[in-house]
Amino acid sequence: MSTQLFGGDCLEIMRDMEADSIHLIYLDPPFFTQKNHKLTTKDRQHTFSFTDTWTSHNEYIHFLRERLQEIKRILHPGGAIFFHCDRNASHHIRLLLDEVMGADKFRAEIIWHYRRWSNAQKNLLPAHQTIYYYTKSDQFTFNVLRQAYSPATNVDQILQRRKRDAAGKAIYDRDENGRIIPNGAKKGVPLSDVWDIPYLNPKAKERTGYPTQKPVLLLERIIQIASRENDLVLDPFCGSGTTLIAAALLNRRAIGIDISPEAIALTQKRLRNPVKSESNLLQIGRDAYKNANRDALALLQGLDIVPVQRNKGIDAFLRDDINGNPIPIRVQRPDETVPETAASLYKAAKSKNAPLMFLVALQEDRCFPFGHELPPEIVVIDGPTISISRIVAQMKESLAV
Image (cartoon, rainbow, N blue to C red; front, side, top):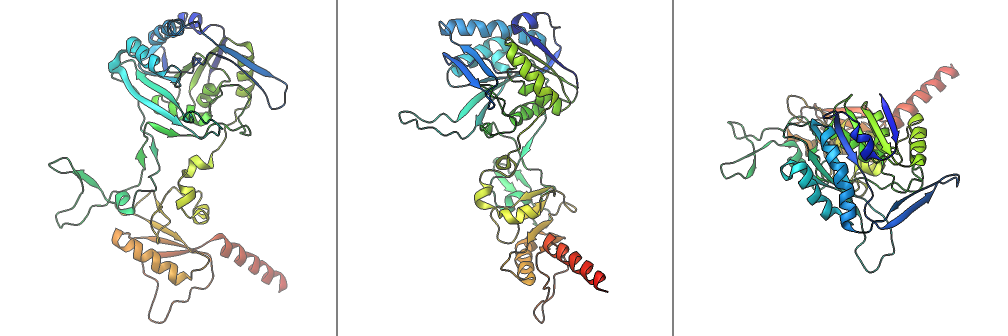
């Protein structure tokens, strides 16, 4: 994908850009911290700094207003802007965005929530930043992203289709025989406006040493929401270049601008070798560490599943389904026999109209008590422990002959 970098004042550079040409603009300008920011890289070879001091709020708002007016001019009619700020000036910025973009073009106030540690004792610990989302018109690109179900969501809420009754209350949908209608493939819930994305820790692979560096995961999410492949993305305060890295990873064209030569050089270096930190916390959810069986989920990695947090007989459902009916999975526990695992799975899944159930066996013993047999809906597959042990035993046997 094409990526361009410009050094200089974004106001002057944007004035030379074509009107209606940029599909998505993300800006992370100075936050009105009234501080000089400085940070040195881990290898102590480079120091990055910038000044965020102003004589007044009026000076700061005038600085932003001039640039927002150009941003609106160059923004595509179907485009969007995401303005990143924090508690220092977010209340002023919201009013300014309403003025320049139009209050009716406001789409969302996104809260980026993260965990950071501090010994602050005289105030609440800051643990979020704000991203305002505006569009240029009422016809704009918006891609629905989905996230995992909350651990507080029970299995029936996931599996059973719901509708609104005459009073507008959500109820389970039923067919003409009074049976609850299944919900079909499990897609997750639409993304909310509170994003729990970890802050870059000092040891993160993508950490560069730039003072206000944002995670690639955060910018990827913004780009996925409001643009399509090959669209043009602009970051007029590109800093360490995270927006451009995310755009390249998602097959978008991008333009970055920064007044600092050091920031431009850093971005050029990152673009030659894009790095993104992976977050296990984000992948399975913070609460999953407390509620899900992590060993069971580890064995199911690679499958497109929805983990189940509050059910003793089911570990996960495939996102796929059979005629709208769910496909549950359970992994055998070390203290269970296969028949016991099968019984737990069948008891939990039979009321869900599951035509197919998978049991992942971790032990060879498949003996069922007299008079009992494996329900026909359950398919037993060997876990890696059994498969590897069996192959090794077969190899030893063949070599001994």
